[in-house]
Length: 191
Image 1 (cartoon, helix red, strand yellow):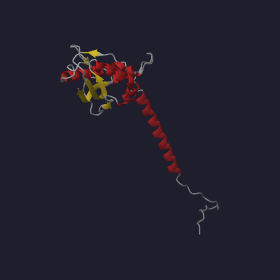
Image 2 (image 1 turned 45 degrees about the vertical axis):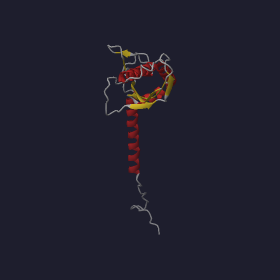
Image 3 (image 1 turned 135 degrees about the vertical axis):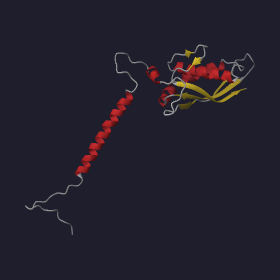
Image 4 (image 1 turned 120 degrees about the vertical axis):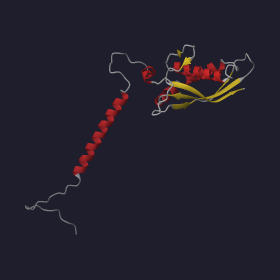
């Protein structure tokens, strides 16, 4: 037998409150979370930009420039991102006979958000690297110093393709200036 709803003194039925307070609390909490999420998203989007709006919009690569870390130190709270490149196989300059070079490299970038930008520029980046590699003599890349200079030159060419001007130190060596901090060779074969 089912229980009848409770009646008041005048004989009217009193409806039971089935969690209306709990439902209201859940709706209020969801609204608060959505508002906070929108504020955090807005702050992240406006994060590194100046408050002034007088300047014309610069390309994305130039806007990201002030936020980049180019001092060579690594912030362990924000580990770098490594982006692998496809293998390069080129003929070296023929001044010292027929030789070819096969290189597999990885790009070290400070910011993981650069991955889509690098992929968008990849045809130009690969073209520049191919031209640079094929212009080398076997003797120029046979030593550790030669390979280090090659890695710096590739870094310089990639950052230049992304719109960052090359920077040289007092000795005239390229200094990384841009989103790509270093080029790391994972395989280097000269034959």
